[in-house]
Length: 314
Image (cartoon, rainbow, N blue to C red; front, side, top):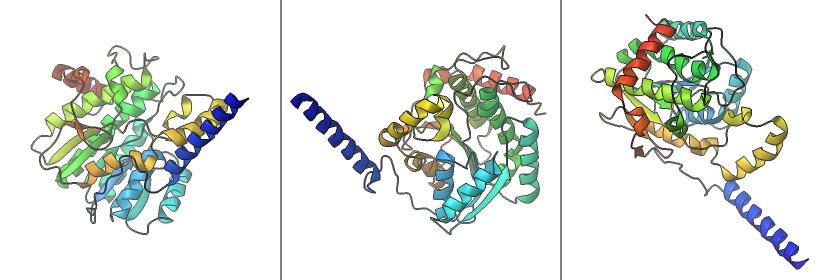
């Protein structure tokens, strides 16, 4: 009996400490203190209605940025804007509809931006899906490949002229450390992928690295960051709803919050990075070495050419 008593007491104590650490304002893993303002700067954030995207929108609004929240769901985007407005009255928050599953939606979004925005200083490619049940999009592509890579490829390229016009400007890819476990099957972007999330993120890394090379000297810098494991809705398809009931509290206690996970992105969006481009950054915004799997330039070019063909960019 005494063993169980001590074990129970130990669990309660450990849980209490975890909760206290999570709730206290002094416990912030990786929260940065960059205070530079973004006044008169326009930023697009994809997937800004929840998670890291929403937290990034909040932080940039605090710095007086004009934030275009590119989201698929209008109701969720408006709810996110309402939440942000409870915290800060600074900045502008504008919802624009964007569904990265649909090339038609991407083209319509970009046309709207080009027609109504004079400047675009930062593009944050944040939206993603993870462990989604197998599905093909209306463009006959596997959903992870469409949302996590091909949609980003088309979106970014269609906005390049506006980014060049607004230079110095920057493009930020929110990637994942899991991309190093991916493998791109260039023969099949329609079928079930081996590791859908990792494979699609690797494809996007190939694009980011080739893009950085092509944009040298244009005034547009390209940065790629992996935020690490963060407590967001990204993993909602990873376990069943019943298990989520158990897993979510554990995630809340053990993983960094969306606010904490957004800080590296905010840092890349705000600070003066000089002439840096084409680099890889970790969750705290620290520069890291690119994994070997993403270092072959011939693969970057091949990924670009295939993406150009499948999105009918030209």
